[in-house]
Amino acid sequence: MWKRQDQPAGGQPASSNPSNPPMPYEPPHPPTASPISERAPQPEPEPRRNSVAHIGKSVRIKGELTGSEDLYIDGQVEGVVQLKDYYLTVGPSGKVQANVNAKKVMIHGSVRGNICASDSVTIGKTGSLIGDLIVAGVVIEDGAYFKGSIDIQKAADSDKSGGNKKANAPAQAQPQLAAVGGNRP
Image (cartoon, rainbow, N blue to C red; front, side, top):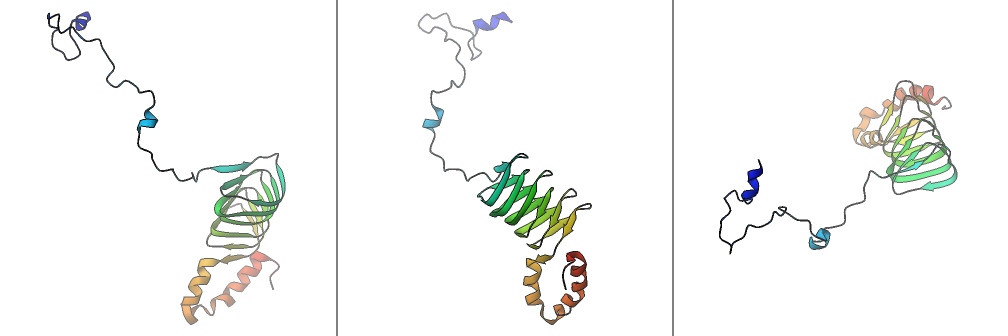
């Protein structure tokens, strides 16, 4: 075990030649003083989509709320929420009384106002929404509360190319919308 000191790192016995003394042990790759400055410059990374602004339970906002990042609301917001290309999540303690424009909306608290989402709206089992939706897709979980109307954007685009086959569909769908909306003629 201790005899390894007699042999250099190469594994061959040390020579007795004084002109070639054994070398002291050095780590294989010693750290440099500034490794970052020696590297080639790399392009700036894109902004992280994972950054989320958070409105806590004790925060209350009145007015227009705009942003360029995803937003999580657990407090109270009253007015207008503009997050055109970003996600809005209303937490279980969140209370929003606002018209919302976002890419995707997830509701676990309560929202009172109209929502326009370019992607989808999800109302969780603890969520409630009173207002109209203009959206590409909707998910309403069991136990969620929804009162309003839904305008599916993608279905409207396919109706235009559908021809006369779709002409009778609005008359059949009207009673269902009246039952969901409550105030429709």
